Image (cartoon, rainbow, N blue to C red; front, side, top):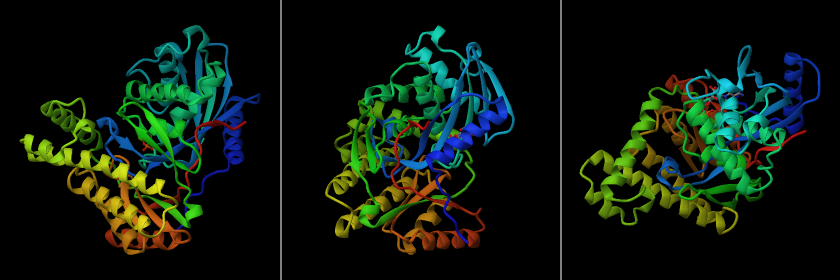
Length: 405
Ligand code: ADP
Ligand code: MG
């Protein structure tokens, strides 16, 4: 039987992280924070082109229980990883921290590097992590971990940044630096903004040109709809080099066109005419049309709860986005194509791959109550194709990173 991966309640998440902290490092006071993973509704590979994207925070969150220390030591444990780790904050620099602790101590490092906390106030801590965000599924478990750490340290070190959107914007930039420079993973910034700056029941329209946001109503339950996330479990072969190659194509194209970024392309046919390389032309066509699709998607959502022709139009935009990512940007995978095709055949109003691609997850917009049936159809098609069994979850738009207790 196909099951949906449940999201924890706040109480359950807090209890799990606290228990892990106590089991690992002994009894004592602890405070708890959590931050969500995210799924992008539309606007893929647009963030590093100064474009638009439209993520929603997942109800699935990463929880950290934290206890301050007086020295410069960080002791870490995660329910998702083996063993405990110890890192001295003075040893954190690019290339120096192996594995998952880099996402946590990288945030501590970046808060100092950004000048948001003086080094002497940045004291050590014990931290226990637990999460119901799937790993490596394109749902940004990495940003959930960074942002949970960021909001915890903001309070632990008395920075007061999490209290308003301007402060949260700075925390998001800190998390991007942590991931890029200490964890050594490229990230464009959408994930951290989604995790820190979202609003429950809304999608976050993020303009990556200037970091401006707008909360777009996205209350699917009120519209009799639900969003099914299909984690394909497809292996992420070649993904690192491919991401860098796509970014480079976009930067090269922008240079050739004499614009700061592909966001500035206003006349697509003229831009395509001006580019020699057919491959680069297709990459540019994806980015420019995808940014336009985000605008049209948001216009439709602004028109009221999705229903009738507006719901059909949303589905059409999702299909066009998937086709563009598959054919022009070439970042889809057989598993993603099959998940999308099967979901649509099983009655989804729209479906598309989401996240960076080459595996990861797809989303499908469904009538409420149809998730079990569509998930079963996708599972059957995966079995028949010899693919790994996918994992499913529902994604009503969740709230941002917050203190739990
Ligand atoms: P995604 O963000 O799509 O889930 P990434 O490869 O960017 O995939 O991030 C996954 C990595 O983030 C993990 O390999 C691990 O290093 C770190 N991570 C995420 N969540 C946790 C967690 N709960 N505990 C420990 N490490 C985590
Ligand atoms: Mg990630």
